[in-house]
Image (cartoon, rainbow, N blue to C red; front, top):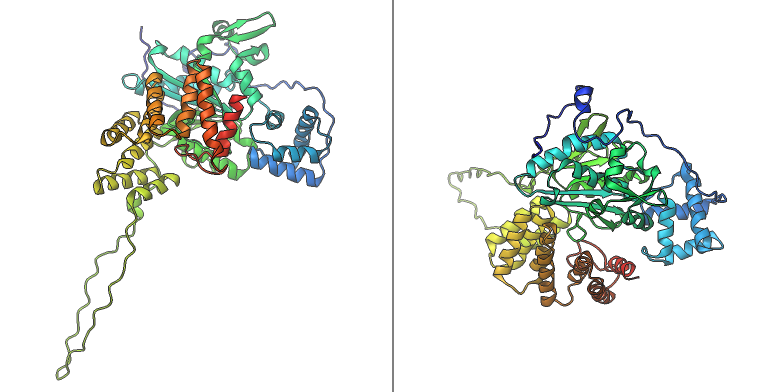
Length: 535
């Protein structure tokens, strides 16, 4: 029997009848669960205390802030020293000077960087952590999305940003299995990213101790996990397959981006991540997350994070026990036409009649004013895209179409913008129009491949990428994305060959050069990511 997907009316926490709400949605917690989240501290093996000198404190604090985004103010100074001690022990560095030099010389994908990130980022998490968040998802947010999409795209995109060892994204996957009948008929992406490679490795394994299940109803554990001989529990394959884990640095890497699938998200969970950032870093991260959401999309921060100073671009929504944030369905930014200066028509001043008996004064025409040539609308549109003014960029692209309907880059630029906004039908249409105009441009095939991939049409995506590479053998992002799709199919040999092709092309580029169609990623950064996959 088909579930009723009509979303319940939204009510505030004060008006919500507790008993009426108790029976709604899947049972994720024991009946006597009180919604408090108790932390039991388990101490790691003790490390000797490093007392950082002022010079060491300042240089390591600046380095960590610059590269990872984490800030260690004076009251957290001891934690920075504790983390650095763990890294020194693992690397056998004789002094902090040696460690600093080693970190400065190493790439962000090196083993020592991974050890630094693992030492400084603590992934304290468990399944269905913060019941109020999952209640809001189960009873309001996801039913709303399901109701809107049930008879159209049946597409849901969720991003767990800062996923640690995977309990959060797997919780979302289990919740979707509880909520959606005939789940196989839906196109669902659960993207899970983290900066900690060791945590991601554990997440991909999907094996957990009983500690990760505190506060979770035993029915959930029995339904989705298989115990082993080591008193651990392996998550079911059907749940594991729903989650895509990727390495991503929220401070340094570009997003939203079609290239790393961080665009057009319906829900982003970014909980207890920005509390470690300085204010300016938090603003940058939240601006990027806002841009990564589709119109009407939802951001769920940690309980300690909501601060209207940082969330002013969002609309706060109150549910029982929590506040989450929604992106407005229409942009708050005023369209460019409102701000453009339009001089009003000025009436000509009356000309005084010449005095009787005097000839009229001779007038001379002023020299013509040379106006600067009008800027090309297409180039202006690209600048607007880089500035994040997407609606204004669209207006300029349509203006360019009116001026020159045969300029093919306009068509695939429109396709990419609509793909980033999550309007895949429009994106596909504009890319196909570009190809119809001229079949020799590789870019529309590349964007079309990303559209196909987001629709779950992997074979068609691979075919489009191969066409892009045939037209341009030096198309770095096409080689890289083809490698990712080969990996999805389990073809490791072909994936490695494509990665090697991309790496070879990147070596010829300056490290700081932006990779074409890479949405701002630098050649050096992409090369490091590829090297980490090849080793």
